[in-house]
Image (cartoon, rainbow, N blue to C red):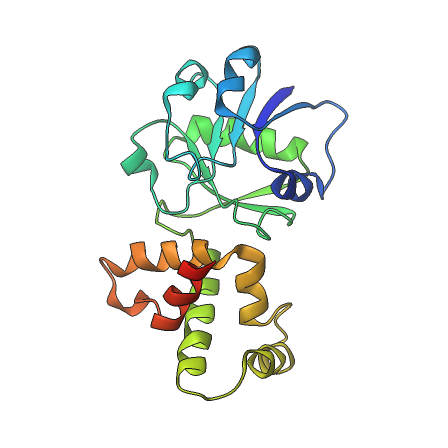
Length: 211
């Protein structure tokens, strides 16, 4: 099977972290304009989908095969195309389980075969903004920023407390650096338009803007 993957170096490294089957050939590209050169690909990954402004025009010739897009803030219903959403935030691809959603059972079966070649198991979740794990982690980070605003403790101490007290792999501020605080701010802002509990902390928004 031949895959074409639009990505950056960080996400490429994460995608490769679990290895690739010998039955799979991957062509790596860094611009959506390059897709036209890979019409024979069996599946497509656009891990820069949000960065490119949700443009789908260059994917039109691929919708008869699995098309994975890294879309955290737009659902399939909003994209309105037969895509598979994948949680491609930095740090989340470096797992043996891929958080994905799709509304078509046939496409789901095809997607599982593709992910299997990347040594990943599909974890199918509802078609909601932020998936599930990214929502949870974003809220943890947001609460940490509220605590920081209230002078409960320092970033370093909050990170240490969360790692020792809850056995998290990273503290919330360490997590925010790995994911990119701008991604956190964008998701929380989007979620808060319909659910006020996701209202981002003022300090979080301020630091994200200053990056």
